[in-house]
Length: 417
Image (cartoon, rainbow, N blue to C red; front, side, top):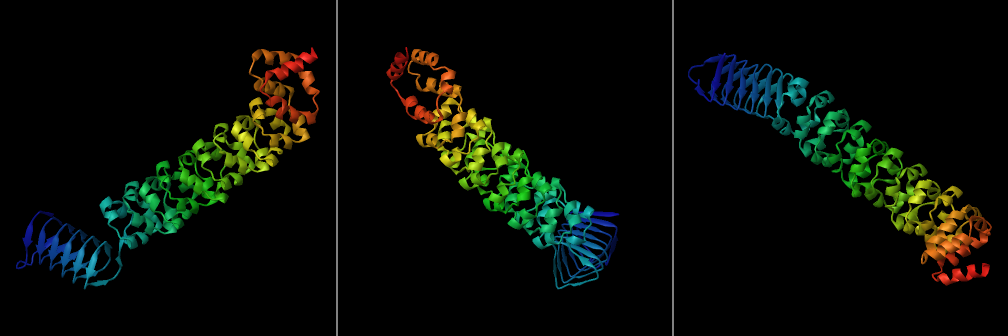
């Protein structure tokens, strides 16, 4: 075995045969070499058999019998008998008998390529990789792919990527995926995208997601979605969110839902919104709620609504409240009802208002003097409240309870005394 490192060998007049030799950074002229490995060399006028070439310049040579080429320039050469070419330039040469590019490499050979070598592959060479070769790429090699190379992958190649390879994709690579490539991702692959990389998806890519893909997002991924991404989710895809995913939404995400998106939420999804997140709904979003959605609110959710949200509920939607929901209203919420809302309450809803709700409401409205409230509460016991006719409750709420002068109350109680 002969090793040549940083050497210049001129064999023009010697016609020397070199077998089982390893060459690096040297210049060889007019030699016959068998079973040799070449790296970063200049080889002129030679015949080479069973050799590996990396980053070499080969001029007017005959290369044959099981040769491997990577990033080589071959001019006026004859190449035959099973040659493998990666990023090589072959000009004016005779090529015959089983000449392969990158797709001729075994999975083991492909795995040996450095990240620089991977990044130097042409998009056509990337496209020619079979699924076994794609799956053989290491996470490091996947990360080394350029955006152009990533975009060159076809749907079959995309689907063949395993979870580790998907997780190895960078934010830049994820952002470079075409809509067709995004749609090709399986549910398992979608769930494997790291949250920071998921945030790189553009609005167009988010819109390209299918309902099945959206439903496959983990809770952590859902929480990681940006406001722009949340607002970009299509109506049909939004309805695919599971109860667990809806619960994972943050207050900021709930607040950026469009009115169309809010209106599209199913009853199960509405009931799954956490109370803290429900309070993030704007007045416009509350107005967009349908009667069915309002009726699907749990008692805890109803109690969590702010006074502004209560006052924003449309009268037709307010009528959808069940007796149980009405009972769950706090005195503050009852006091927040507008005159139009109170007038729209059904008899069943009015009958559902409890004595304690009215009593608390009087205390809330007449809090100018604790003595007056206390005196009035003693005179206006629960039994008396229960005797109030249903059609009198709107009057009490809109008129009696809206007074600001405590003397009105004293006058009424004095008469009773």
